[in-house]
Length: 78
Image (cartoon, rainbow, N blue to C red; front, side):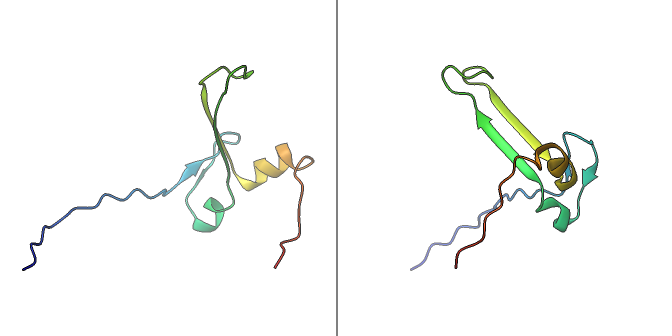
């Protein structure tokens, strides 16, 4: 005999992101997938502070403008 229980599942979905640089809000899926999202926690001796939680979200235009000269591009290997 099967005993069945009804469950409610809560799902979280990003519907928009505001760029931390230009402050524009983006909600189009194509724009959202191109965001540069960085999350980190400062470690022991970090210049940011030990245990400091930090995040940065940049749209593709701001990412290119601010980081473009430092980004390295690689061929995808099959």
